[in-house]
Image (cartoon, rainbow, N blue to C red):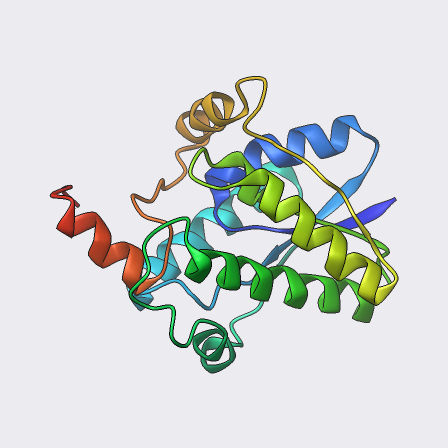
Length: 185
């Protein structure tokens, strides 16, 4: 059975794809991340997801739409930090777009790779995914891919495949926060 897998980045997708396939599902990768800036960073992430798809024989859909819509979803929240209401609004926006894409493709199950990251709240992600799924008559596959060494495994897969690993979540606000904390590029 096919499912639509929202992919935030190639490294996080590795563990997710392996575990989804172990559950008998066939993931179609959906890269929808209008939050990623600057454009050069966005391109690096698209290239890494395309490489993963090619290496593992997966279908990938890259959706470059939605920047203005995403910006509207976080209005008034821009100055909040990582794991704040800003991030929750961003995640909800991307999950809703993934669900809508699944619906348009007549795919009944969707999920996200976001729970691979130790910086993301799987409980929140699963709850918002489940609400959106109920609203649209779909099923959201609730996961916490970071569990059972999932994040560690994603690092190993990334090294083996030579995948680009980013150093911040994606939006310009998380990019700026990284430098405020004194982290290097």
